[in-house]
Image (tube, rainbow, N blue to C red; front, side, top):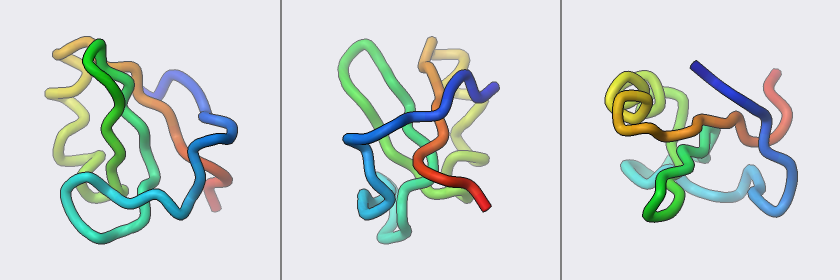
Length: 62
């Protein structure tokens, strides 16, 4: 479940932590943040939520 939309300073020029795609989602974890493209966000969403991550969209979503 996406909980919020992230304002700056996270920008659309940030890259996915799993591939070279533009980050679309930020996962806030106790140890820090992870950034994911749409594909990897879908792949890892259930595990991130189970680990207690707060998920947030990055920038405008068309």
